[in-house]
Length: 232
Image (cartoon, rainbow, N blue to C red):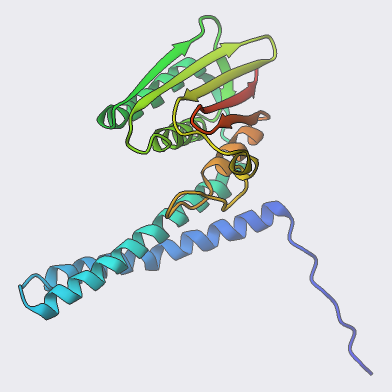
């Protein structure tokens, strides 16, 4: 008699995200060991022989790949953990200013002016402050990278109505083509060398976990506008 073939039931999205996040976390331990061993090897090949020079070059390539893997894992862990929000009363304008104060020095080094225009009035929301900071900082980093070292301006606005709070980030950078704009929120899609393609998808998940949504408008050579909408 032929045994009956059965398939295991598919994992629900929450369980799958939990498993994937656990796997990424476990991979960080051997990756940290690799990084430590590379540091020891780099210290051991400091003489001026041709063999040492070749070894340092190969070690530098390995270091680049280890750092890239570490970035991918960090981005994936942020992406996987956005389902669990720790909501608490928060002041939106204060959180925006905190993020801008953190991001401003690096912007200034690259000739980018980072300004805020925050609406007056009640800005109290139920937010996960850490996730919000992560999302807004990610948007500002994307905007900063769009200038490709040429300098420019990034403006961050807040406004409120009876139902929603809005955070708008506008830059006058290189902008995106319609084809890129159509795909930029897809997981693992990236136009950057070495990018994980999880930046905007993570922001989108953070917004959706808050009951809000993310919208973008962009065109080549005219910059990009990103709108983060939160329910009040």
